[in-house]
Length: 143
Image (cartoon, rainbow, N blue to C red):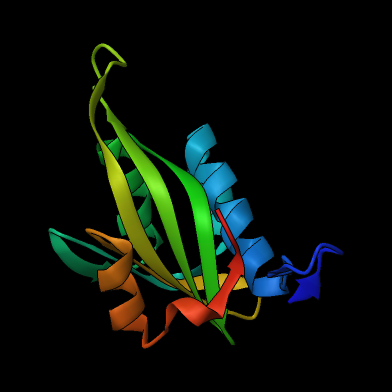
């Protein structure tokens, strides 16, 4: 926290190596760059969401090709290697490119040795924070 000069305090944004990896992961996802996602991920990466959980970069590649999702991070929470991101998600039709679904989701990343070891998506921030064992006080970048 830091003083703003008018009696208020504001949380200071910090970027750790783990948060930087997660930011790069989002950039690669949004660019549709599966090769960059694989390079940023552990070979045995855990990939999870509403349809279940699996492992490996092959599954990650399949997910990127099938999901047609864009994720725009809004809030970031962190404790050590665990990073929770609240973001706006948009799913697009692979045929027309039109948005076919949108919503705010929460994702839990585990970053080890500068690579994403796990990414699990939840329906909302509360579910992601609970799964990660984090509280909102662990916010490193406000929306």
